[in-house]
Length: 260
Image 1 (tube, rainbow, N blue to C red):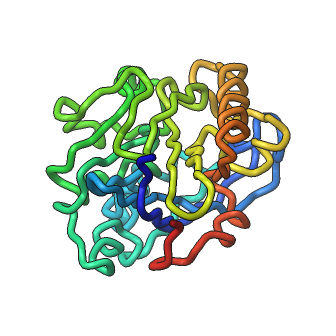
Image 2: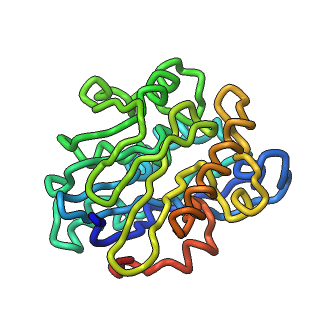
Image 3: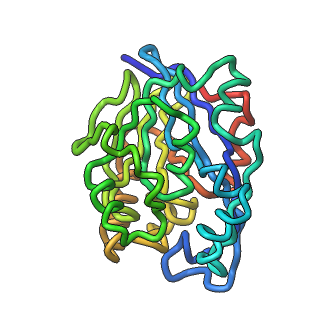
């Protein structure tokens, strides 16, 4: 059976927000600190990045920071991101450069998952067709239009497919129109499902509660995607990795350690 070889969780920053952003109808007035994660996957056929974090430039330039993030207050504080949390820095610590990345797989196009694409020029980018179409309407406040400028060069996907040996794309719409998760088979431990923002927190999975924001108010579709992920995890004996759960993140191998 083909399997991926290694999986590195990458902490690309943190942000503080009202918990209801992650749990629909729950957590009003309660603020949580959340990791902003990307993942590097090494396979026999090359390397994949699942998500890329924020655009560092928007966070470091005071004018850009105010322009893009002040309108999100008080629900969101601006993300916190250090220079050494940019994707190229992590790659350099492994002796790699962006040219060593074969596929950038964007689970969805919100700024904390797609903004860092500017640090990876020339990489092949995979995005769901419905995700890009919805993002280009301008109706999703989590998408920054300038981060879509090279979308005509992206490889648009419509179906679930094998991204590489041992890495399978899973359609999980609801939070956004074309959200995708990944199932990763590994040589030693159990398979891992990167939920993306289909499930921000363990609570989303345990209680089958939709994320606070759902595209076109399709919270029922978001819950269907959570149940789909749980069913796949049960049949494949896989671990479900939520995307913005700080306690869960702290249980993962600290970089440069990896899961295999």
